[in-house]
Image (cartoon, rainbow, N blue to C red; front, side):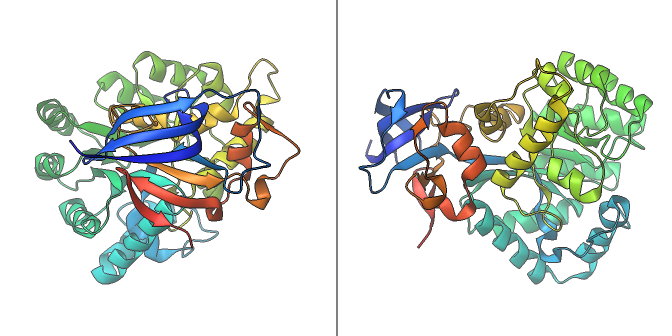
Length: 389
């Protein structure tokens, strides 16, 4: 079996994102990492003699995005969430129906180019427009190698089985109006086809009865937002092993509130992060991590026993995200047996300059200082899919 080798001065290796140096990856023709060789590193990192002190970082996973509305940037600026995105009469849904497909497709293509330029190698899309929307995205993706999961939507119960078959799961806009009949169809097809169900919940307000119904039914696997969850909601989520995706910048854009970060950290819930609608947010997970951190600093001042590390935040867009969507066998970290998905930044870029960089400081420097222009190359399955001039 032929293979390729890629060397990098530094890299974050394994599910714990351990910093190593003089790293060599052996990659097979399928883009899988066959072997990793590296040297351990001392306390301090000497990059003063290195012209190109590149560091290899596992490819980011954007855990929640609506890529189809990329063509409609800022059309809903300063308007409320329901008027902009609530189906079926929100601004975005009317536009998706009225705008020519060519414009929607061009928006999707540009969004993919933007994502790989910021180190994102996988995205989870919540697809509007039923089978038509799924087919539109799949056809557009044929020209790109970026990893993706598609969670489709249905209008009529009769569509559920066909959507399950062509998508990776169902993405419910809410748990409202999910009748007993629909629940039975969802559960049957979910088990039969081994797919997942995700659901937006408590984004604008907390409906305790609805939250209890959603959890008690045991149909939903992944909860999106949970902005207004209280501690007991999160405890039940944890107990029932539901994944949680937070979208803090989206919540801020819509004035919906702050996610329950303090309780999430107290309960050690392995959240992942998404950037939500392209029409209101760029898909930059570095911006998402920084926004999350600043909110966390404010909210966690109420409890001195709660801490958050930069490494923990990096895990939210890598290994946590992969685990939340059950794709950790192939994605989420630079590890033997996983796909060679990663990106490179150069620690010698001016915005990283510091009097010293050690093995602890490297994580906050990556999270707090990296800009999109610092991403020099992005690899998917060992192949360069983006290279900055």
